[in-house]
Length: 238
Image: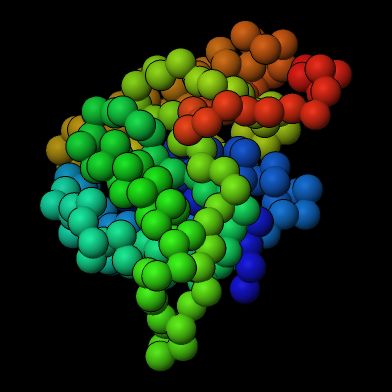
């Protein structure tokens, strides 16, 4: 199955928090989108890997993505090395996306920039003819995405561009809250974490509102690009 967009996240819920409104909008526009999680988030303070699997499946259903896979890397300890790069390359070649979305280039959680660089490196390597990969014994063709964009996470990194996601925030928030074990619950008796506060949950909306305010729309999501962003004409910039 060829996808238009393939979004990677170091953990289940990274994609939802970082760029799910954009994904929902692209799907509404007829694009085929998939998600690949690098780990099962097994080191998360709340819940379990098994519960995260269920939550990730529910979030994928809410967003309407075509496929969601998990590479099962070790949460907190995966590396940007040949073994992990080849696993990511197999996904890129399997789905042949034109655009790849991946973790923030810099962030509080060490897996986020690590996953960002891993996926970025794999996107380049995936286009090299002499790197051989296969799935189920079938050799894969080389494939290099046209663009690699990094969504923004915990840190307020200055975006290179923003996407108007007005009309898609309800779906984003619903997909995030599918991870009910991870976020604000006043009745929970589990330990508090930086993402379990009501302030964090509220930030999903107010950060998107602030980015939207800066470009004259209701809501926006920001991205960083590895190369210059080109436009066909000045009139296409809103």
